[in-house]
Length: 251
Ligand SMILES: [Zn+2]
Ligand SMILES: [Zn+2]
Image: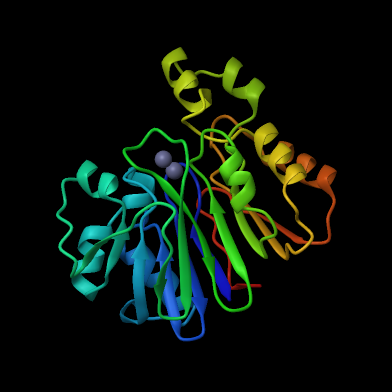
């Protein structure tokens, strides 16, 4: 399995995953042209994509999914709540309902949608596996639940959000209501919460850790880098900021 981050952050999220002949997009928060251009750099055509997984309805994840899927005839997989929030019909042809905690398989890749606490209708995050390795996505998560700890143990790859620094958020310019929304358990993971999570799960199998969904206003690259140095570990650590992408990362 390999994957490439096309975008990760408060404005746009989109990841391409490949195993065998199967290509999947996880979230679709960029414009159509941006996605097509990024895919071309990775030598992948939009028509090659077997499905688009949508974690929840927020625009940084939803982006152009409706028009993109229509133009290229792609299947979109999402929860009932996400479809409902965007007022689109689940018709079992191009829009397919996924149920949290129920595994599905798209060609060579198995997908496990996992319920996370976040301020959307029915948000999920994903663990993708093939016969050899598993890759977890954990962003847009207000707090680490016991279920998350159990499910995200012993992964080979992980995209984890380090959304905000507690002090920067509390002393920053955001109105109190927004500060509360981000930090009240249904918003995002802080640097401190993500580090704590990494200390609690087994990371012995981990080969690649990508740190993403970093706030533009309430975090800094140096804070994230400093924390990542503290945790040690043998795995490759990659930080993806706004407007940055990666090439193929292999598990
Ligand atoms: Zn987001
Ligand atoms: Zn969100």
